[in-house]
Length: 176
Image 1: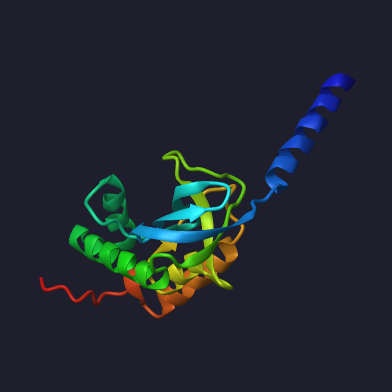
Image 2: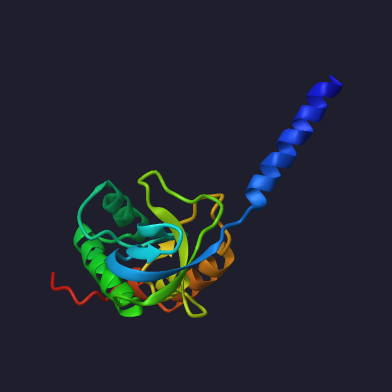
């Protein structure tokens, strides 16, 4: 019985240590923007990588299962989702033009199921993930254990919702 308790304690300590080993910060440079929550960049120690911005979900550019879920979550038509997806991509491009120097901060989990590096993107002292949410181009979309900045992202989303920005608004410039 004592052996089992000692093994359980060791396991819990190792588990806690793995959760506490928060990510690192790497220098990088933007290569291109794929959509409102995915970029391609050169990152030290990784080389050229596809990066999924942690904690956010931007509207999709094309119809898909995920885009359909977005129509229900945000109460928008598929056409509106696609238009907002285009706007989100253009906005992210304006924040991170090609060759922009960035800091890439990882969290607990390095990669998603699609092989993309999961990261918070910093331009100077500006958290780009947060800006996308605050301006209404993305919503909070967290997957534990990658939750380092979740409080900041939630606060940014509340601001966007109050101001009815982007996905939280109703004026899209579309003719119906």
